[in-house]
Every structure is written in C-alpha cells, then in structure tokens.
Length: 328
Figure: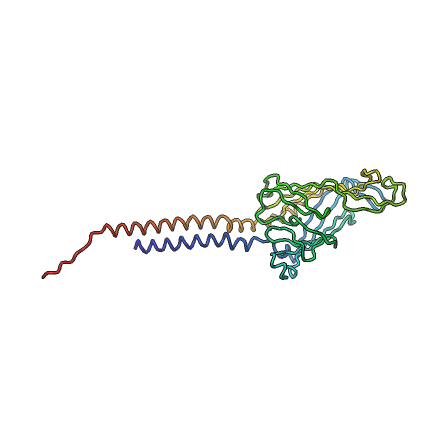
C-alpha cells in the first residue's frame, strides 16, 4: 500500500510542477497581451475623457486671449484588427490602433483636433515603424512606447515615451507607487522643455513684428503625470500641464495659444478601474499565486513520495527471511 501511495505522490507532484511551469511560461504570455482593439468589449471603440481649465486660451476669431475657459478632451480609439493580421504584423505580434482626439471649450467650439495611428508590440508596447503609422497624416519615425498603453508587467523604472506633439520620445521617470480605488499603480512623470513644433502665420502686430504678416514660431512645453496599473500596463489616470505660445522676432513669447491643465475625469478613471480590476486578479493568480502554490505542493508531494519509497525499501531490507524446510 505504501508503495502505491508513493507512486501516486510522485506522479501528482511531478504533474503539479509541470502545470505550474506551463501556467507561468506558456499560459500567461499567451494571455498577457494588449487586445487587437481596445474597444472589443464596448462596440469596437474605446472612448476616454479628460477635463480641465485653460488659464489662457487664444481666440482666433477676435485675436484675443480668453481666460479660465473650461475644456473637455474626448479620445476615440479603435483597433485595425484586419491590419494586425497581415504577415508582417503577426510576425512582430503587433497591434494597430487608430486614435482621434478633440479638445472643445465650454461653448462646443473645437480648439484642437488630431489623429494618430500607432503600431506597437502587444507585450512591450514598443512602437513599430510599419503599417501606415502616422500623426495627423504625416509619416513619423516612431520610437519609445505607445502613448496609449504601457507594457504588460510594467517595471518600476523610467520609460522612453512617444510624445505626439514633438513627434519624439520623452523620458517618463518612475516616481514611486500609488493606488487608485484600491488598485496599485506606478506613477510616472515626464517633461518637455519649450520646443518649437511649427510656425503659424499671424498678423505681424500680434507678435511685435513691423511686417503685415509674420510666420511666428510655435513653442510647446509639457509636464505629464501618469498613473499606470503595472500588470496590464493600463493608464488609469493622466494629467497634462500644457503651454503653447507664439514667439515674435525678438525670440520671446508674445501670444499664449493655450495654457491649461487637463486631467482624466473621475468617471473615466472609475470606468477604467472597473475594466482593469478583474484582469489584474486573473493575471495575478495565473502568473504568481497558482504557479507558486503548484510548485510548493508539487515539491512536497515529490518529497513525500520519495521518502515513502525509501522507507519502504529499508523496511523490506530489514524483514527476516523465511525458509521452508521440506521433510525428507
């Protein structure tokens, strides 16, 4: 009986260890990927909102600055599922997301609008230069991680992050852990020092030029704060302090196009948390709890099985031999 029990323990132990390894190294990598479309569970389109106030906002109709203007940012993102099924995209495990965002004031007037198309690795979120990626229709040499999503299993480290306004990467510095509604997050902060992003043709008098018309350099600066759920890489909360100005011939800021702080709305944050929370629980169990438990129980069963086998052999060796003497 002990021999049978020993075999059962060894077999179950080995099975649990193999299953733990399969969960950790095969099942989790297969599951821990960005979806081909972020709106798969919501009609195919993901919609996010941010809100804030522009301390200053230039009105092109009156050529004057408005102050304390409420703003709303709406972003629509949809995955190009068909595009991600091409041989090139599949070989790189690439997701392709098309995104459109607009900024509106409290009167419903569109302040700015932009389109972006990002191709990125579904695990690392690293941008890939393929599949028609662009910003506002312009071809761009992409680098860094996608601005829409951090890597799966985000680490407590700095990341190169693509900024669509400068079309370059900025350093998103890890500043420490945090929580949102009980969900653990990593906090990252990135800055863009005043950088020229283009020129804008304006009346010369507006920027201190004697010319009737002047091509004013447009400058942009940013302080971006993101809170990221590290297992899924989902951005739960974003806050951007942005400044855009026009400079005159003397190289100084003459017009403030926009000076605003815009942050994810509480409703948007809660909606994202509600989607992410069960994903975190599932991946956490499959990646850590279940494999560790399976490994520990499997090792215990193996040890018990081996010990039973050894004890059984020793007991058999100590048993007295029986001899049958036949009468002549």
